[in-house]
Image (tube, rainbow, N blue to C red):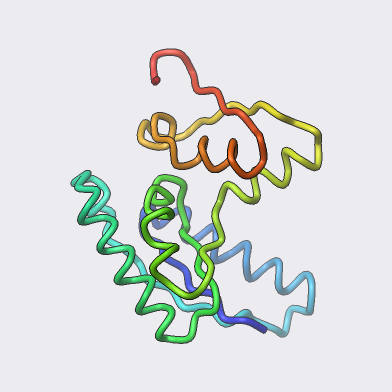
Amino acid sequence: MRTLGMIGGTSWHSTLEYYKLINQGVGDKIGTEENPPLILHSINIALMREQNIEKINHTYLEISKKLQEAGAEALIICANTPHMVYDYVQPQIEIPILHIADAIGEKAREHGITQLGLLGNKPTMTGEFIPSYLKNKFQVQTMIPEGYG
């Protein structure tokens, strides 16, 4: 079984949900006596609140490299908003970051959906990091509620 690096903490609630669902999924697939090898790094959410994109990018890159060095064979970011670092971090590490928009895009494709509503916090709804990924990779357009764009 491959080792997955998890970057969490932004929020701990979503990190907990990722951890739970990954373990449940492995248990359902190969048996409840198995646990997946996971390496978790929890970031202080205060980093995101500072809104210093250079500092955020640098921090996520350094953590990604440490998880890679620790044996992670792929990474996940356990919340929507921190995916803003994907385009900065992914080219600078050797292992894949499993982008949250891949799951969204695959489900949309499976159901023939080409336009989706995007809900989240303001940075997620106003940023291009999820809409552009969905558009470029899956040809899926996103819409946000009026007043947020």
